[in-house]
Image (cartoon, rainbow, N blue to C red; front, side):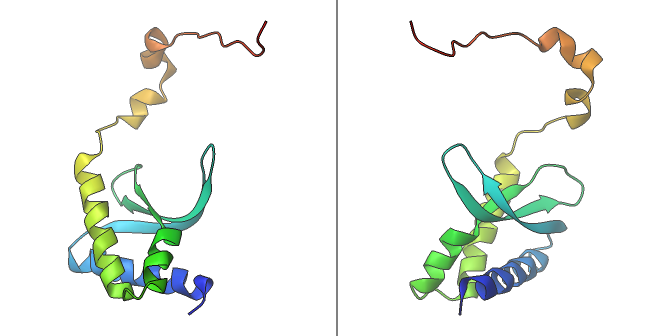
Length: 116
């Protein structure tokens, strides 16, 4: 199975495993760009939340290429998603986007752009 087909099948397997466990979530396939790397991810987000957990499709595909069945990979990553949900901090996004509430918490930091 090629990578693109795996992404689709893996997302379906992940969604099925999450449904079996009673999770009410939304899954979104996307490219995640970090400072020194980029990777294909599936973002799993509870339907009542704005914060989700990213799963690396590339790591899942590597496990598949090593002979692990997709269903087993989905179970493993579902465990990781559930752990991520349990350990994620509670964030009040409304207050973060309300300038009046946040202005007293803002500060400035100067960073040098060149060395002397």
